[in-house]
Image (cartoon, rainbow, N blue to C red; front, side, top):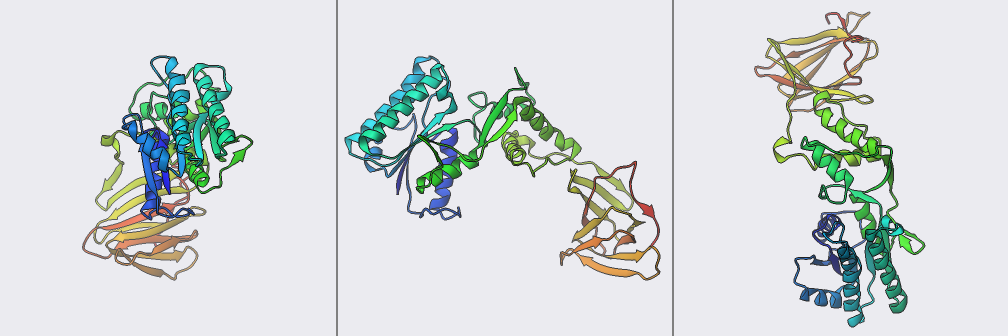
Length: 380
């Protein structure tokens, strides 16, 4: 299959081409397409003469090219209507009635120069479909967000993520405005579904089935919480699909020299203890380092429970029910990863039996609260 993508260097174009190349190379799963794909990538820097060849050979057209922020308003119509006309004329010249997908906008319903140009492109394509019997797929995209979107261009989410990640100011005129968002991966999934012959249609138009609605202020609050999480160690609520997608988007705008961030290591003569990540509903993960011969723990809990995983060194974890004398031992080693549950009501300790530091990943089901530690000293 030969696929023409206009606007190949744009936000949607880059993501679409990346996934189509994954399909070609056999890296992407879950699609009905074969890997016998040829991609014709066309953008404003492409030799215009190539468009003629591409339109002659294409089996499917993703028309993603468009003008969003021109210097002159006349460029809206020239880019969103004029180029569409040129594209369709080339297809007609070769009698190529392959399906054509058009990236339009919900602003096509509005009375402004950008919306008028998008509506003109839609009408042109609908007329073309009726006259030539070609399948046309018009997507009126709402606000699309995700990796590789250009900040300070046509996406508030991209601008907010970029500026907050770089410590730059943002401007929010009305935080109560409700935004309709679609995530780039959901867009690409739908476009490839259309390529497979299964678009999500609603009347004359198509749409991405997964949409998210949130206020502008809500978006900003979430992004600022992502930035703050490096200090609080609190993970966002990934059970919310929008939060999960927005967090991934935010991370893609981090400065290249700020991918890492420090943690507070609590050090004493026994070793160290470092909190790693926290979650209100999933507890917290910490890294414990024990020096050779050192025993840590010697306490029990009412409700708090833990999981220990030794990843380096060797040792023993001992348990004793607080109303019993019998001691149970579990020998652990980084050479044989094994999770040990720490049940409530058992006092427990962990001893380093080796001659090197023992490193243990520790998970606990709640964030430590110094006012209610639920930790009671008692030797095993």
